[in-house]
Length: 409
Length: 213
View 1 (tube, helix red, strand yellow):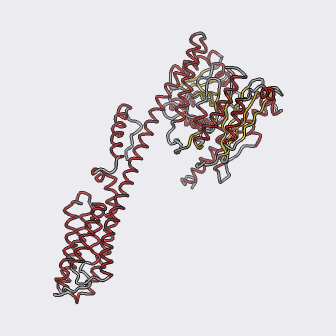
View 2 (tube, rainbow over the protein chains, first blue to last red):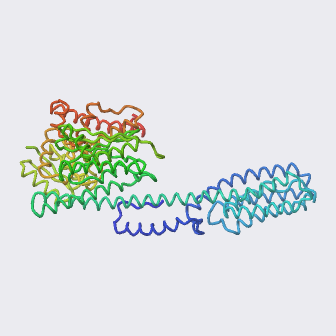
View 3 (tube, rainbow over the protein chains, first blue to last red):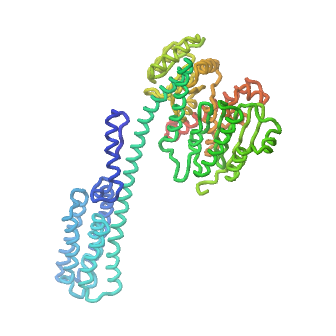
């Protein structure tokens, strides 16, 4: 796995990241020929060959047992010994040869298949034309699966066809058992080959995902360092500007605006917090409403909601804030608080204005000025929630409660 | 007036904060620009209040807070951060910081915050109250062991009002409590949050087999 050390020189990292980006894109278009020679694909192949080594020993013991048991069928009997020695010798050689990726050449795989085919071909010579069981029997599966692992489904298919064809061609009569074995060879090869290919693809994708995660982590780290410096300067300009007054105060105010925007942006970009498809982080969405006079508070963890619900809640909150500006004043202070519970979310929007006098709401309704309040209620009730307006000595407050209906709402 | 240490890696900030504090009669006994400096100078000068930036060269502000509180539990840490990283702020408060202020706060807000932290009162912005509330709600929803302290209804109510921007005075009026009682409740929520941290550390130690003799 490629990991960029966090302590490297920044310029070096940027170049690395760039190169990885390019390479990442090439890997994404699976599978190219070179993809099969990538370390991940070779690792998968090596694992499968290690498993095949065990299988080879098992089928060898099986073949030897059967050869000894049926030694009387061989003519001359010494042929049984020669065949058994060939199988033992080749198996030992194959275990050694396949163990190293560099030795897994076309010649090796071809020779493996040739030995299996050869033993099938000598069967009528040593056991007579009316033989029942071929000399190698299931021992040929070693060569078959080696072809499948190394050349994937096409290798498995070709080896299966070759073995089945040679086996069937030498039979005087073909009963169901013989046909069944040939059929197994034919389908077993491509199936194992296809599975090998799938696992290799997954390994490549996993590698790519790990590289992408490492890149994202590194980018986030760089961004943090850059952002922090910018935030420091913006905050200082804002503070000093306010103290100096006049034109400097205006500069300070602008710096403050930029600082808040950058802060909201950073919040939305924290690594590992990206919401799932169709979902939105309500905490991040609400944080974007923060201005010099509006404070937004909420949990540090993401509050994932279906995107449409989140957008409606943000729209209702924005409408409530517009209401504050309209009725309390352009520079009225307001506070937005988001609380997340397992089954619902609560958003409160409070101002510290004089509150709405008893009867004013009714009066406003009569004058047709309830538009904003109705739009807030409408939006929240459409989501199955509840919007309440509380007014008193410590300002006016909207309490928006919306059930969390889960991912598929 | 209280003895204060200022920790910030940006010289312009360090100087500005130091100037403001000195001008208001605080004694700035030390300044530091890295976490390592902060810890050694803290041990040497024993200030009562540490005004601490979170994003400083290793060890970071959260680790410095942990170290300072373990060296001298009565010391007060006020986080003064430009960082947008809410998790860092929460981690620092869990580690024992009793105040948090964004760097864009005015000079008067800063001086008031240092005075209050020095007096032992927590300095909660609505933003911090929202974070702490979120932390307790999150653990209430996900905890199965039940060994973490939870907030009382009163504490939750007060924290909510802080997060909604009410001053302690306004909260006291609304709930018909004394100003002191409101402060005590807020302080309790911080204490419980710091216990969360200890529970988590203990669990980690047990999982790692560090509790074995």
